[in-house]
Structures are given as C-alpha cells and as structure tokens.
Length: 445
Image (cartoon, rainbow, N blue to C red; front, side):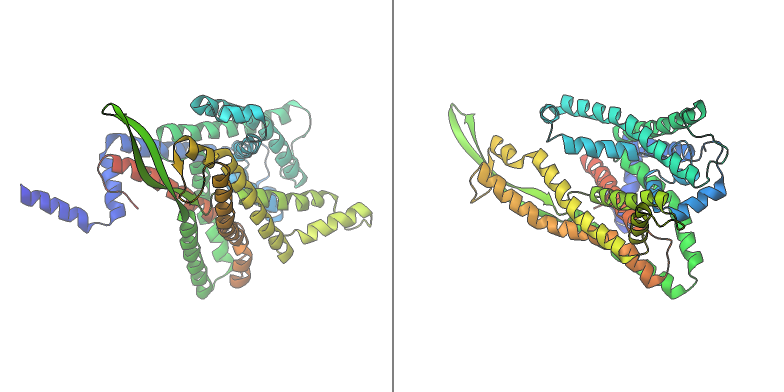
C-alpha cells in the first residue's frame, strides 16, 4: 500500500507542474464545472461574433480596416466581431468605457462616494448604474461606427438615417453588447476569472492566426520571423515581471483583546503590497482612443482639392497623427505616462489606505498614523508608478520599432494585445491556483 502511494506520488512528481495542476483541477467536480462552463460561454461568444448584420460589402469592409486605424483598435475589444460587422461588433467596449467613467466619477460625486463605502449593496448599485450608462454609450458608439463604415462604402444598400432599418441595426448592436456583458458576468459568477476580460482575451486569441498570417505574407525571411519571435518572448517576460512586481510596505498591528478577565495587547506584522502596474491596461485604452480620434475626424474634412483653412488643419492632423509617423508614437508614449499617473492616483484615492490602516489598528513603523501615513504612501505610490508608467509607455510604442526593425506592418497593436492576454492569463491562473490550494492541491505558480 505504501509502495503504491509512493509510486503514485513519484509519477505525479515526474510530470510538469502545469500539467499536473490541470489534471488535479479536472478531478475536482466543482472546478471541472467552472472550467467547462467558462469554455462553453466563450464558445457561445465566438458563435455570436460570426452572426453578421445584413447588407454588408465584405470587400469594402476589409479595405476600411486597412485605411482606418480606429477600426482596428475597436476590433481588438470586440473580439474580432467588428471585422465581420456582426451583431456583437461593439464588443464590451461600451461597458469598459462606462466602468472607467464610473470609477472616475465615484471620488468626485458625493452620492457615488457614499455608495462605494456601503459594502456589497453599494457595489451592486454602482454596477447597476454602470449597466444603465452602457446602453447610451453603446448607442452613440454604434451610430459612430455605422457612420464611419457607411462613408467607407461598407453599407452600400442601406439608407442610413432616422428610419426603421437604421434603428433595427442600432438595436441589434446594443443588444449584442449587453448579451456579451451578460455572458461575462455569468463567467465571473459561475466560471473562472473575470468574464469581460476573458471575452476580450478570447477574441484576441481567435484573431491571432489571421494576424500572424498577414505578418508572414508580408515578409518571407526566416531571420526576420525568428527576430519577431525573440521579441515576443522578451515582451512576455517583461510584461509578467512588471505585472507581478510590487513594493511591500511593512505594517504593524496592535490590538487590545479581552482575555482571562483583563485586557491584553496583541501585536503582529504584515505588509501592504503596492503594485508597480496598478493601472493595468486602462492607460493604453485611454491613450489610443484619444490619439486616434483627431486623425479619424480630420479624415472627414481632408479634401486634397481644397485650400481652405479647415482643410489645412485637417491635413495637418491626418498627416501628423498617422501610425506610420514617429510623432504619433511620441504622443502615444506621453499620453500613456500621463494617464497611468492619473488613473493610479484615482484608484488609491478611492481605497483610502491610511484611514483603513488606522481603523484596523495598523501603522507603518516610523510613520505616525493619519495624514503623515497618507503623505508617505503618496510618495511611495508616485515613485513606483514611474516604473509602471514607463513600462506601459514602452509597451505602447514597441509596435513602431518592431515594424521598423522587421519590416512587418501587420502587427500594429500586437503589444497591447499581448499585455491584455498575459494579464488575463495570470489573473485566471491565480484564481485557479487559489481554488486548488483550498483543496490541498499544488498550484501553478
């Protein structure tokens, strides 16, 4: 009996840890259900992403994606559904925009700030408001995308305007967005990982073969493709390193406990983990959205046969804010750094770490509780955010230098996609590992 147990244990040790952890996860009924449920929801998402809107010229749609950088960026968050102009063409981007707006408004508006401090009830109400805000944002984004596509000749047989046909198209796009948000919340509730992030992840993974195929067709040199592979592996290592990097601020806890008929003071030590990349991918979304919009709007007014003042301004923006020019990427780098600081400070202001520590009887050694602790934490956050901001700015501009080095122009947003994929994969693996450790299994990490 002992020999059988030792043999079984040796067989497990001989397998790679990742494979063994996956086998252990599939042995547990509830974990197996979570994994299979997540895959089933992603399969439904991919099916919906291929249900097209009627009246689309597919050749004109492909040409529009080659001409408009904004469409390629929005297609990233629709999971490839926009490139097919399906009913899920808006993806979860309106919901992401609504979530960002609510996070920014929460510390500013007193009513939302009070709700955020009311625990689970407050979070549910804010989530409900986020869903309400998603609907008008989806309508506005759907109208803008259809207008942009119609100007590119993608909808040749559609009388676009205030009519029943246009309203039906808009309603189907909004319904597709809310359906994807519902799928994402089902994954979060019953599956593994963050559902909305996994939908974006699934769309990026599904579009990878096509993107890599375009890159291979543009360049046949084996050495160039090997260089691209080395850069990709180096990027993955850097992304994992910065996503996991954190500054651990030591914290002491002292509490008075009534024991044995008298008060006794107990103490303990811990640390406050402050991540280097607290903002995640949000600054990249902000920066690319803002930098692409002026050039896209300018394209409507840019007429080569006209010499007017408005046309001169439009020509300047259209030529300067072009992804093939260096000033475009310099502006992207600056915007990413600025938005990283802005979003990180907003997040930490909402957490109110100094007040939370003081309320729980904790203090940082050598720092007085209250305002001095808040000032100390602000200095620490600003210092380490420089690392996260420069990291995100570097990730944002890597595609330009990679395209200049390899000559492959098809991988414009690959580093942003890579950052999203690695971040979502790490978060999902971390959740699965915690589930395994709760059941006395070894985890991935």
